[in-house]
Image 1 (cartoon, rainbow, N blue to C red):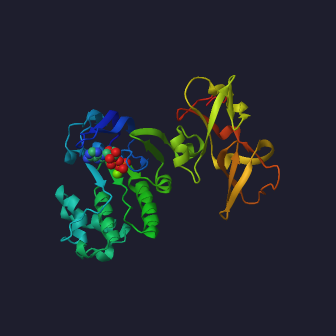
Image 2 (cartoon, protein in one colour):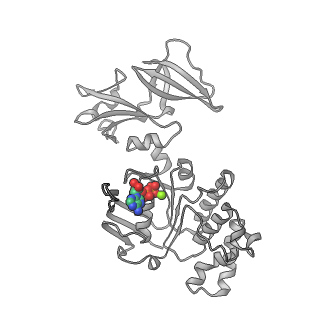
Image 3 (tube, rainbow, N blue to C red):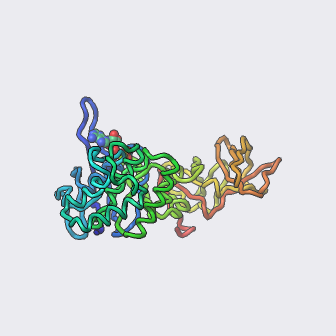
Length: 359
Ligand code: ADP
Ligand code: MG
């Protein structure tokens, strides 16, 4: 096992005919601590697979170094890096039995047969593959095959990191939920560093202790699920994570005060000076009806059982708020307030640290 460090990584794919080259990774400095359960979360095309392939050595970065513990492995070939990588689509040998598929990574590294059987059986039991061990992989469903792929990723106990690249894409929703909890459990048992790539916030937040959020070739925030919720460092994190996501509203600076929806937001005042585009971010959970607040018009209310989501409008801007069960929605002179402890000011997308708030 190892601590993995990416230093000043940039990656550019060569230009396709008639097109500009693509900088898939713009600038990346990131440490993956030994034994961590990480999710790498971001929309399609933000560079997640490129990043994994740089860690595993399938790609050599255009710039920067990859360091395992204190060893620079940037030029070291994939097989020597001791990494397990599970891809989005199953990689199995159709003509081999399920057992042989699972045993393959171990046999390949000369693990004695006496050790292989119990290990394969253990992994098979975990993935509910025990009954299929003697069957050829060709006969299995897409789910079954992907479970073999997962098993092949998990079977070695000597790897530095196990990386999963959107491994549950082809799995049906119910099984998805089961496998996700299993992976988490497994991480707790074996303690190997895991990096789980997904574009699904629920998957990321349930699997990981730390979530690395990527956007357009950059890491925009690394944090616990709670940190990403409470203190999004970038407006992208705010609206990508959360359901519904954070409200991001245009704002301006006026005599040192931050003005949003034609109102002063006193608590955030000191962060507002300087140039750039200002915005205010507040999650729907932290917008509340209050008699002394900003007047709004209610456009729509959706009842989601445990809470309601109200769609309201103020000064021509639309925002959403979550109304907890048991709270009534006013029927006239509707006004809302933002919880100042959970309202953030952003300049050009990045959160401004407010001197007054001390954070
Ligand atoms: P993700 O896994 O987050 O969906 P990728 O790492 O696959 O993102 O891709 C990042 C960017 O690099 C995208 O714009 C994608 O089109 C581009 N890209 C990926 N692979 C190649 C390639 N082999 N050649 C050129 N561009 C590529
Ligand atoms: Mg990908």
